[in-house]
Each structure stands twice: as structure tokens, then as C-alpha cells.
Length: 413
Ligand SMILES: Cc1cc2nc3c(=O)[nH]c(=O)nc-3n(C[C@H](O)[C@H](O)[C@H](O)COP(=O)(O)OP(=O)(O)OC[C@H]3O[C@@H](n4cnc5c(N)ncnc54)[C@H](O)[C@@H]3O)c2cc1C
Picture 1: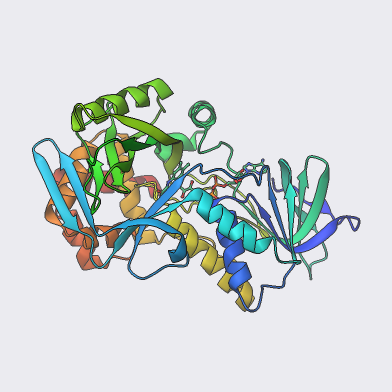
Picture 2: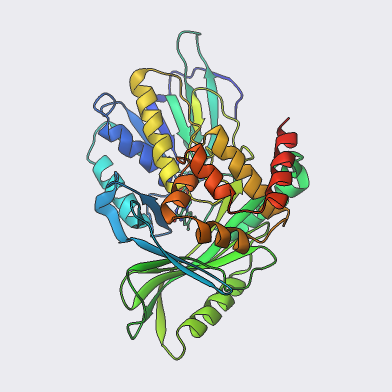
């Protein structure tokens, strides 16, 4: 999507065009609306559908009340980790583990934006985004959708070549890159794929103060798999079967594990399913876009996902805040959110998981066995210092991680 076009003066023109109104597009819109210098800029937001559904729950941790504190649906100050012969509860202090429902986030930002006359919406399937060949004193890009087109001084796109909440499109993408992309052989690509259910029991069965972050006592699928159990009240919880592996499963396979797990955990207890979510999040350091100024990739497309964990929400916030600050200051856009040091750690962990050098269950068990949750959260947020990094590394076997680190360094050389 980078061929140059000549300017078309008949097209409507905007300061900023946001292509894709999901987690990243709407976060960027939020920070633009909040910016005193940019809130009156003309903005076009395009998505194939603004009829949003509760298609995902975002969980993340933070210390202070965040930008979307009023949307937090539930939060926990204790997490637990479980594996064979291992059960540990950890206080998350000074962090809080939080959950926001997708629909609350979409509705809050879209309803505010719809009141503003400088923000325009286009519901359509986007076909192409290209740099405009203007004079060397100005710049721009054009976006085409079914039945129309527009130009923007900047275009921010989060359109992936697959849909993260449609497993079939993720599977098709896997096959295409495994067949065609030689870089795939150099940089590992795993999916964090999952199916979750909000279950409602007839009786009180949950301890609402503890988020079960990882329970590895589930079929590992020859990879890394765990159950995630987030209680919303004594009778209700989000229970999610999550796997890090090269290929997604069939819906029936996730369901079978969920059914067995719930039956074993809560024997004889009856429950109904209030809601379900599925997803496949790319865990990779492969670049998924090749845009050039003034087109920028954001969100999952813009490498905001942490390659070793699949967490993205807080990195998307950082990325969008940074972009708005750079626009305010008239600086070049730098959308990269992961620093080199933590990217290296991600690459090593991903290498170990991808090449099955050590079981993921054992890695995470050791990390949580020997460290405070706060240290692990800092490490996974890319905010740990070198002493904390060493502390985490000392939890892991050198004979596995050192050769992996060398392989990653040699691959980069
Ligand atoms: C089910 C699920 C749960 C997740 N849970 C967490 C979590 O707990 N914590 C965490 O940190 N991360 C989580 N993630 C990962 C990540 O935070 C989200 O995927 C996040 O939504 C990524 O934002 P995005 O804007 O990059 O993509 P999206 O939110 O998917 O937005 C992309 C938008 O582009 C639109 N679009 C796509 N193609 C076109 C086209 N051709 N034309 C027009 N519009 C188009 C889509 O309709 C969509 O609105 C989860 C992901 C999923 C799928």
C-alpha cells in the first residue's frame, strides 16, 4: 500500500484519517479529543461497522487510575498461578489488575465523538491506503473505500490482514505466511488463541478477590496452554482457555476443554453461559505493515502487541498518547512502543516457546515462584530496570536461555 498517487483535488480532505475504529483507532481518537491543541482538527474515522458488540474484554494492570478508569468493569489486587504441584497467590500491589468490557469502551468514545462537528464517520470496507505525491512542502495520503475516497495529512491504520476475533481468518493468514514468507523462518510467529465464557453459576462458587491468571492444569496441546479465571461476583466469572501455539484449534476443541475444566473445578454445580469471546492475537516481531510517512500503523498492525505475552491494551494507550504528543509538538511520528532491551527479552522467550526448548508452564511457574507479581508486571510492561531484569532471568535455567539468547543475537546480526 505504498504506491504514490498524484493529488486529487475533488476528494474531501482531513487533518487526520483513522482507518479502523477498534481498540487503537478509538484510543487515538480519544487522545485527539482530549488534546487542547488538536481537538478541533478535522478527523475522519472509517470502519466497516460502527455497530459495535461486546467482542472482547481488555485486561491489563496499572498503578494509578488510568484514562478509562470510569469504564473499569472489575479489578483485582491478588492473582494466583497454578501448575502441577504448584499453587501460589500473589498480591499485585502497587498494581491493580483491571478489566474493561469492549462495548463500554467503544460506546464511551464513539458517543463523545459523535457530538463533535469536526469528527466525521464513514462506515465502509476500506480498500486501499496510499501516499499522495504532493509538492515537497506538503504531504498527504489517500484512502479508498467501497464507493468513495478521501485524503488526509496523516492516516493512521489498524487494519490487519486477518480478524483477531475470527479464528478462520487467523488460520488462513498462518497458512499464507508459512507458505510464502521467508522471514517467517527467521522470526517466530505464534498465536495467542483462546475461547472464553462468562459463566453464571446457580450457587456462589467464586472468591471474587482473586484473579486466577494462569492455571496450567489443562491440556497443553503440545505447546503452552492455561485457563484464565476472572470472577466478577460470587456466581459469575470469565473463564478462558488460552494457548500459545502455531495453529488455532476448532471451536469444539476449546469447548471440550472448557466443559471438562468447569466440571472438574466445580463438581455438581450448574451454570449457564452468559457470553462468549474468541480471539487469535499474533505473537511475533515480524512487521505486519510497511507504510511510509504520512501513513502510520497503530495497534496490533503497528506492533503494539507484546510479542511474548499478547498483552496490548496498555501499549496501545502509550502508542496513541505518544503519537498525539508528537503531532502537538510538530515532531516526526515515532509509533514504536517497545524498547530494544525488552524486545530482545521478548525475542528470547518467543524463541524458547516456538522451538519448544522449555515448557511455557514451567517458565511462568518459575518466574512467579521466585518473584513478586509487581516485578513480573514491571518486566512485562517494559518498565523494569536492569536489576529487576536480572532477578527475573535468575528464575530461569541458563542452559536453556543463554543458547536461546545467542541464537537470537546471531539471527539479528
Ligand atoms: C477477544 C480479544 C480479547 C483481547 N483481550 C486482551 C486483553 O485482555 N488485554 C490486552 O492487552 N489485549 C487484549 N487483546 C489484544 C488487543 O488489545 C486487541 O486486539 C485490540 O483490540 C487491538 O486493537 P486494534 O485497534 O489493533 O485492532 P481492533 O480492535 O481489532 O480494530 C481494528 C478495526 O479495524 C476494522 N477493520 C478491519 N478491516 C477493515 C476494513 N478492511 N475496512 C474497514 N474497517 C476494517 C475492524 O472492524 C476493527 O474495528 C484482545 C484481543 C481480542 C481479539
